[in-house]
Image (cartoon, rainbow over all chains, first blue to last red):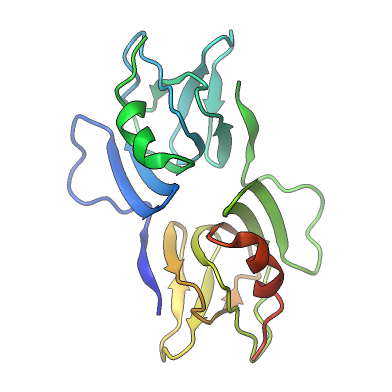
Amino acid sequence: MKTGSGNLFEVDGPPGPDERFDPLLEREGLRIERIVSTGQASPAGFWYDSPHEEWIVLLAGAATLEFEGETEAHAMRPGDYVRIPAHCRHRVAWTSASEPTFWLAVHYGDTAAARAVSRATTS
Amino acid sequence: MKTGSGNLFEVDGPPGPDERFDPLLEREGLRIERIVSTGQASPAGFWYDSPHEEWIVLLAGAATLEFEGETEAHAMRPGDYVRIPAHCRHRVAWTSASEPTFWLAVHYGDTAAARAVSRATTS
């Protein structure tokens, strides 16, 4: 009866140059995604600006988030979670290059429209 | 701009006799919950039988799930996730008593109706 099982920390193949985005579950208005960062950061001047909310948790590794209008960056360590409201502009300022950083992201609301927009928005 | 932040592995106060259920996010049709088990298991003959789907991941500790109709139990180690369809009867057969077990559960669908039902169903 159980389906859709796996392990968040198992990754197929060697790490490439880009972050990995692996959808784990997709439903109307809901998308659960595993993200693996290996030293990447958002380009200078890039801001994620999503029309839907998301809830993210860092499960392994380390990263720093920046939120527009905040002077202080937001260090993320294993277990740290944060809810990011729709249109809250943010960027990934840094991820660890010495170990993979595993994130779990829960996108909810208008996720179909949001998917195309959220990764293509620059300021 | 960031809100609803915290750390999944930080728990207020000493462990009590019961599992802890901490809602982290509640939206229409969506509930993200942190569960901390400290050796508890479902009572004999008890089956969770939820009208909504859920997606759960074990983040620390260890546990064993059972699904009705399956002869083999489902060992859960850190990072293991599983999607449990609506009305897929299951129980927590065992959780580690030597360390806390941290779960993240994403409930989706008719979560309001489901909340009352899912913890009160025995066979």
